[in-house]
Image (tube, rainbow, N blue to C red; front, side, top):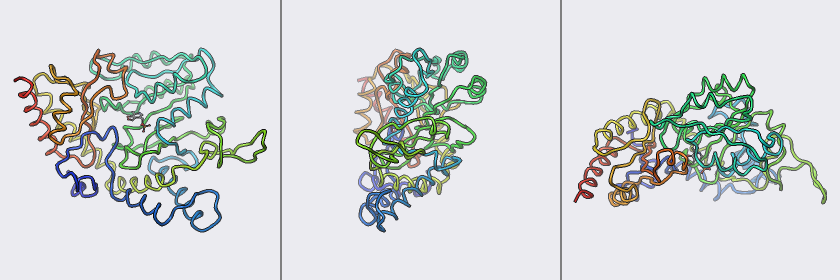
Length: 399
Ligand SMILES: Cc1ncc(COP(=O)(O)O)c(C=O)c1O
């Protein structure tokens, strides 16, 4: 375990025996982030970007400093490429809607994969144009079929929208060959980094995507906030996604003109306290160090995987060559929900169901599975206890 880290998470004060294995859904909350939000609402709060009084201008500065902190965290060339949304889901909806308005035509192909979260599928189903959604396959070991994906990138492809790390298997996408092919054909890419960013250092300048989304609540940060990185050329090309205050140059009753930069995508009062809170949780992560976090969580994942694969009747989805922090599985003869209820009685919180990834489940012909996922507060002791409890559970269901 990372020394004393659990003390930074107040939830364990009230639930000292909790083994929390659902970080992939949403991470537990770190004390400094909670304090930053409490202080913001208690002592610093005013609406931003409008007031010229002291409280408002100070909070506006903190809000924009947080944008800078986010941009440094992912190594973005400028904070002007960072757009705050209410969720990563909204970030993808923003992109799909703007691309539909100004880039996609009927019959164009948008390429996705069968590993995607619904947040990276449904927004493409909703676009106003009649686009064709092409999906790259997965393989029997749960990995992305790279050969199939590369073959499906053709001159008809108008966008690749793909996960950076699967929320079902924890598998990390290898981008080298994909990027080479996309570059050759001048095809833009959207990357869904919701699972990647909390566990690995993201260097957006190396990866160089057109769009990249992730969510604050998976980073030990607040809910209600997503981050969308967008390249300048798209910021310039796109019109607004929503209309309202804070995004206009001039308004008449019949028409309006809009701001040019990221501001045109942030209509209305933004999630002010959440943005301040996110900056605090990013500080926390940076102080621990993402290299250390990756190494720690990776060794935890291998430790759990080695123990789980020795259990009879265990089916694990994924091949663990390039996976981290997430293991999804089924135990033959036991429904995943029965398993979750049994574990819950023993204070182990896991996720079961389709994990918003029904195409993955359909490929394996299952309605769902069980998923354990790790965060900074987990330990080998948690895993030992989980494995013991699985043994108990198997005996219980045998009776
Ligand atoms: C891979 C992936 N993409 C997208 C999302 C959606 O994120 P949010 O619910 O924060 O919008 C999730 C959430 O679980 C996810 O795991």
